Image (cartoon, rainbow, N blue to C red):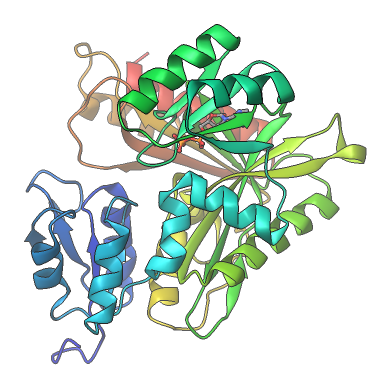
Length: 390
Ligand code: ADP
């Protein structure tokens, strides 16, 4: 507890853009997020007042950080599960708890649990040898998807293999390198969707409208809220599925459920769960302007066991486009901003204070309006302009 304000202290492990934007939401709640960052250049370390430095894989550093926090939460999934468990046993409060968090850390554990819960998942199996990968491919068909159970993000850790030969070779390299591997059928998806739900320790849940996520090269580039043309039935089913998963897993804080929509149209549409993330997520950045309560505020409310905020849309159509680092040179980012603001006063820009590297997420743009095609085109144009200056 902060004795001056009488408000609880929330600590976030990890100093990236998610912590940076959570800090922004914390300010409005009268708080200042305490951040465990790796370096002073981390996006959140640049802006938060209460920054500690240490490695998230160092138990002693985590313990020192947790002292004085009322609740510790995470901006990424890389804190070893056993450390979360150890600190909880020592009396610290960490959300989401280890038993929930592990499902966002380990794709094999996640697939096992979701299968046991009867949630729709792709056909999958753990793969302990190249032969097992080939056998599975022969059964479910080619191409096949191989995934590292732990440590992947933005498509790193996902390999699509076209035939038995490729499967054998890729599986061999991974297994010999000590990677735990799972294989999945390659889902013929119509598009990718995501739904955010927040859950408090009290058990209150609040779901956001279902969004469409557009990926390029395994990286999310656009998010459209609400998902255009999604039937009411599938939208409700997706929200209910996310709520059921959050409740069954005992999630506290935000849960993002990444989904595949399969089928040929609204009549035979079906959902398959791809991934879980237990923190604010790129697929929810639109909510800063596009929902009554942003995902960042909602995550704080949830981990503090405050009642959940209203998740309703603030406009009929909301589009978010990520700004990826482009090539060096040309117009400065400052000049680009100047031109963008002149050209589109309604575009809301968020930059993360990161050094520009090609392909790195350095910010995002959100546009709100009445017509999805129009707001999408504006968001994409603005993001491309910031990236390329043309
Ligand atoms: P990461 O954890 O790196 O984000 P994901 O498991 O979310 O990896 O996969 C990244 C992307 O790869 C997905 O967004 C999707 O486009 C594609 N993908 C993953 N699994 C499958 C699958 N079983 N079938 C088809 N596409 C898949």
